[in-house]
Image 1: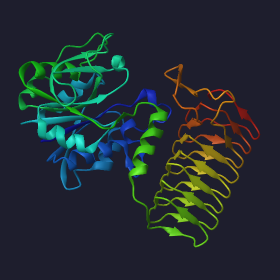
Image 2: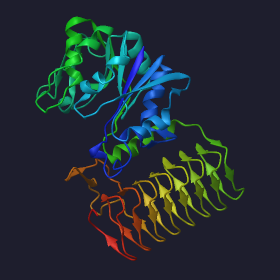
Image 3: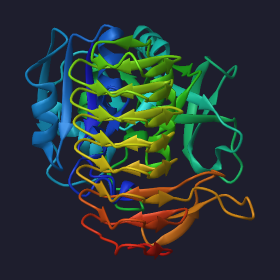
Image 4: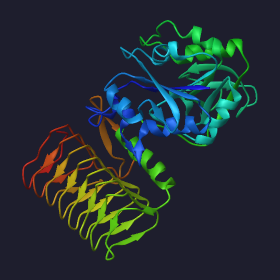
Length: 396
């Protein structure tokens, strides 16, 4: 089984984090988002990975190389973002025999990917409360029964089984990838799925857990999921006067100074420096070469590579891009006085995050002056700045 992993998109809903990094390569626990998908495919027995790349494709090539965990890796370039079927069609020359298709910006229950490969032809589904915003599968028996149809965003869904974007196709499907454009102008993989359903007995494989990582708060959710799965280990330099509890990963080359308190699950990556007297807690990722200064508190956040949070600052429920510099005394507010869900700007519109606590999303190289206050749900574009003592209340 070859596994085609789609990783060509920029991810406009993930901005400002995806301005210079393709969404599938954003950090989730100890590896990029797409690596969790590739790992699931390798664990399920894929004998080759075909990565479909486009936006900032060299970032993907540099990470996975010609071989990943002993499995050969090939690359196909999608020149224009013209839909999921178009993306798989870009990999056509690499395909012979049955093949799987997985989204590089989704997190899957790994055991279900193993079942997907075994059940080929098959499609993964997830039970949802309101399936009207998804592609919905019809099945003979519900659950893992035979699929009888698929319909996009129906007003009256036939089941609560949402299409989870993971497929195992028979070899013949290679010739069915050139589907017409849909009403929204894209070549949809669901049209290929519908053809396979007409020609074959297709099994529905129900996932226990799934996450489509499309927006910044979903990147937080992805880290909450995957950081919690890691077992603690201490390979770096941790002071005897630091206190670590729960599952804490301190990679080789990381430094934890005296007086630091870390409450897992937390990941401290290679080259990161924590403290002294810092407090890190709650499903937090401190990425490579990041610095958390004296008496800083970081809670349930992603602090990306090369970012510095200077002394006497607080960062909660936030995502900081690469090479951000928060000046001393910068404080992030992550809660409204009325306890309402925090809203965030996605493609020009304010939408609910569904989270009562959510702080800021800072693009690469944001810089704040000392004693800056940042209000909940802020979007700071790459390179944005604040003045010392400023309160920032609107996106910048």
